Length: 286
Image 1 (cartoon, helix red, strand yellow):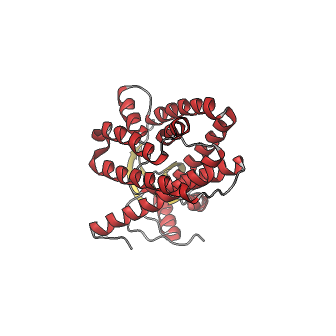
Image 2 (cartoon, helix red, strand yellow; image 1 turned 180 degrees about the vertical axis):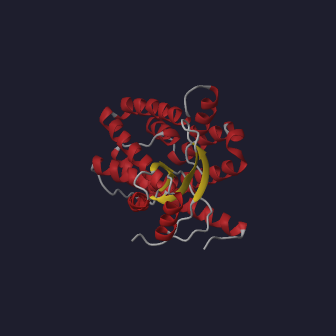
Image 3 (cartoon, rainbow, N blue to C red; image 1 turned 90 degrees about the vertical axis):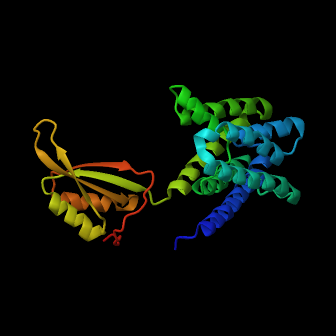
């Protein structure tokens, strides 16, 4: 059941940020760092500075992140700034506490890179899902994207290419390549945690038998459908376009229902980043 009271929602957010940052710190301290595998962004920079100077990693991560967040304040807003500061503070505290336990899960670099990436991605994903961030370089990437033709994702990638290139010089190119594996795995796990395994899909269906198609989807899947007014670009004939959102697991079933109702229907399928609202009742796939 969703929490309605703002204080309860905020308490849950802080709790999940605490858990998410703990998971991310465990991945870093017990899987990655013992094998000289590193993360990207500010954390990666902090790891290299710690290696060269001996300064504490937790303090470096916090100190280096704050200026980036302040620079990007106008782009990210007050709420995101506060959430990010809280999550970064938690993360820095965990990075200061966990080394005291002198615990290492594996000394196998391959296993450390793979499982470290999975666990790191899960922790960071939880933080992002609750509206926070552990990497201030994204704020600068947003600003640079506004001032240049490159996208935010390309800016972040460029930052990390530079970071991993420097890491290759410091730790060796083998370790840098293992770090890239970790980065790739963590990115995929973050997407799964933030967007969910049961990914939503949007279907746009053009059919002369739109009533039959809509009834089949509604009756068999329990999904609500929306009719959009369309017009043929060549014939200028008025037509109905059916809009419906289903889960990835329902795609095969809904395609079969559409073809049964109208074998000549035109169908397009695209990904949906997020779904909010809607009162339709989902029925089991059968």
